[in-house]
Amino acid sequence: LEACGAAKARSVCVASSVVVYGAHPDNQILLEGSVVQPNPGLPLASTKLALEALCYDFAKAFPETALQIVRSCPILGPEARSAFTRLLDGPRIYGPWRVDPRFQFVHEDDATRAIHRLVKSESFGVFNLAGDGSLTLSQIAQLAERRLVRLPTFLLRFAAWLSWRLGKTDLHPGLLPFLLHPWLIAAVKVRNMAY
Image 1 (cartoon, rainbow, N blue to C red):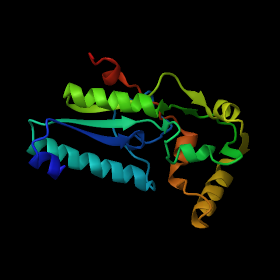
Image 2: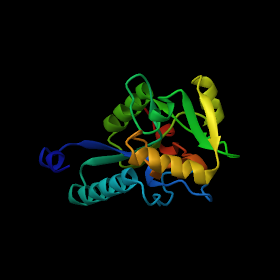
Image 3: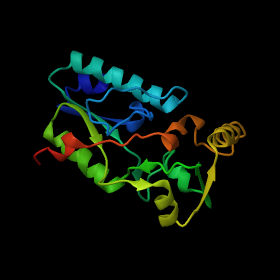
């Protein structure tokens, strides 16, 4: 950000994440103006929130630079690697018992095009980024041809923690709320932009 300010960049786009909103039982569809309340115990969320704070400081110091903060849902595609894509790495997908959480995704090519258009538009503000619709965990397992193993929440928590501690997975146990509670976003501002 300092380099962008020194170079007098006209537009700066920073990749944040849907995780800053947090996954909570009372969540409705999350809009760009929704309150950010990251789940405790998830380093990615606190890191992204700290990044956004730096962005707000930058925007005050360089008001002439168009700053966009993009809060994206998980990005999928041949080159995409994230905590959410790692759910699909093994032969099984683990999920909570009696809950079929919904997920949103955006393809890496669509995300790239949207970010390119945002930068070119020199718009200001926070922008959610998500593809159309959502899929349940059971639909994802079926489409990925993986076996869905459902566990009681306490066992899922323990298994996630133990796998993390033993280095068997790099899927942080702090992501568990995203398997239990709603966190879907609406990409209202991106969809309403004139291209």
